[in-house]
Image 1: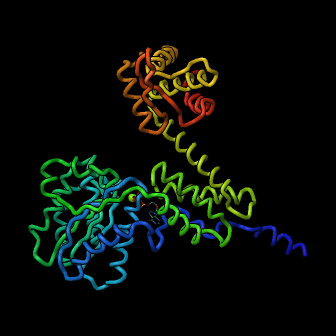
Image 2: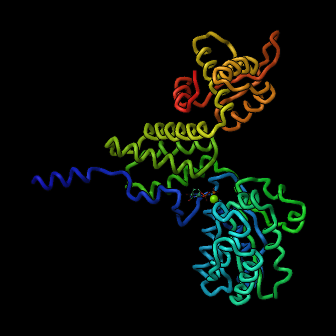
Length: 397
Ligand code: ADP
Ligand code: MG
């Protein structure tokens, strides 16, 4: 009797069926909303089926738009469906391999050549790779994910040399580059020499809209949660909010996971709209805190000045938070901290940065006699929360 009781108590209704499905690293077997990108990439690679070299390709789009997922999905499909293809697929993440040397090291490793991870002459590494490539006698498809990080550190040299390789290779060999970037203008920012020789076919990944995010969340719920343990409306709410904010699937899935965890912690037997709302807030606050913590000193002081003015505005002691008013308040803070203040012009620039980071909202105020000026209309956190956060970072109020 007792044992049975304990047992049934322990396995009290759980919502989460498989936590892995709600994590970032999980890739589902279908990717709703990315059919077009999948088809295009699949078509590009279909040259391999007639033993021809596919075009170089670029994927561009904001974080969380499914670029990595699509690359892995399509290359995985080729590997599985055509095991005898005379092709080797290599995936390299340039957030780790962010120099030409490290990429070359990874390429060698992919072809089973062991070379030291640093300190070797680059040319030797390159020659070893080419030897192994000839020996392998297959076509290569090399995915360089997060390639912005490589280019930022090393420029476009490696892309230049790899993309031109095909001119010197015998017909039965080829190297196809698939470069994945979070910034849309990544190709335009390459040096002119690289840009004129490397012209990949472009596949663009727009941010997800609400219906697509809903589909993505629905799929995760079906795979990761127990049947009947969620309100459909909760998924709609998350999809709507994230579509409006960013269209980032990673964030939508994150919120779903947090909502499920909140529901479980409460001992609820269903993930409700309320849990979704709470999770949206929590994740957001955490993200804001992370952003604020990385701000340089003067950015923090300016944010602290705005916080004070927001508080005054709540008490109706000021009516508009103009740039000039912020500057005066900020100068007071700077002198309190005994640091020389920046110029008005610079502060104006920082306000725009804070806006770009989503910490404040700026609008034009056409104030009639007082003239037109930029004013801060809103802040990402309430004044009291922002004060707490900034104080914990050493800002004196
Ligand atoms: P990116 O590389 O563009 O930053 P990812 O491909 O890593 O984005 O996707 C982020 C997260 O969202 C991953 O967990 C991925 O599995 C998931 N995801 C992205 N797009 C889809 C989709 N269309 N369907 C299902 N899951 C998706
Ligand atoms: Mg990615």
